Amino acid sequence: MMEINKVSTIKLPILDGIEVKSATFIDKKFPFHFHQCWSMVFIEYGSENIAFNNSEFLVSKNALQLIPPYSIHKNWSNTNSAWTYKALYISDDVIKSVSKKINTDYSHLASFPYFLSYCSSDFEINEASVFKVLENLFLDTLNDVKQSYFQKNADEPFDDILNYLSLNYNQSITLETLQKKFKVNKFKLQKSFKKSIGLTPLEYLTTIRIENSKKFFYTDVPLVEIALESGFYDQSHFTHSFKKYVGVTPGDYKKNSKILQDL
View 1 (cartoon, helix red, strand yellow):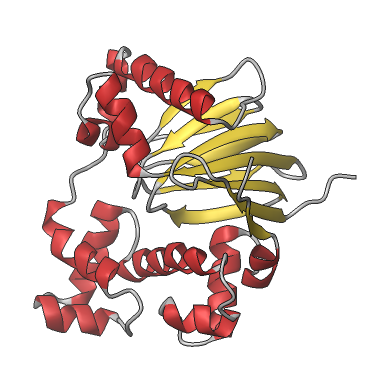
View 2 (cartoon, one colour; view 1 turned 135 degrees about the vertical axis):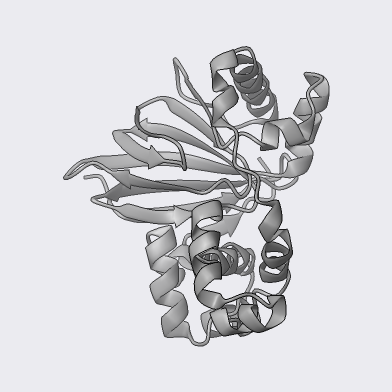
């Protein structure tokens, strides 16, 4: 029987220590969020709904999605239907290597909210396969001129705040903190930030904290310390937020995370 609401992760000794997540969910809805690295998702079974700022669509088995860092999206399963996928978290250096090979500026690739194609067979996780998939995915998208309107909105007016949140995520930060530091009305900030970025300042901060907490799961650091190091005020707050954004508790995630030294 298929086990649902299950996540396991493994770090492989290829592509700068790539992390691979295997997951199965049913009746699961993830809120708007982002990743700090490139995420490549291959749908192995079922289908998922995914939404970005300007589009929403359904992807099914054998769909291959690539989502650049900080591209805000949400995804959810269909009612009473299992949804199984593998996600690869890929470093900037790997993408930059591919962009150089295809003679395309990295920043141009990063400006797209997503890339999407379908594979005719199962996706093999090895260096040659990943590089070839990335190359084909980029070239197919860049050759499709209709993709131009998919590019992300610029968020320059909020760059200082985004940088502050990214650098100080493990500190106590509230709307009042941002109001005082950036000399802006907190209510106007909340509204304009949400409209431009797609998340409120505190939702953005929570996502940053969740992303940074994951680096501790391959260590012996206790969960309560992971919570505090990541900026959560206690383990209960951490557990609630982590399960909302990741789909399982930090304990389950840590239990099913391992590093593979040799292939």
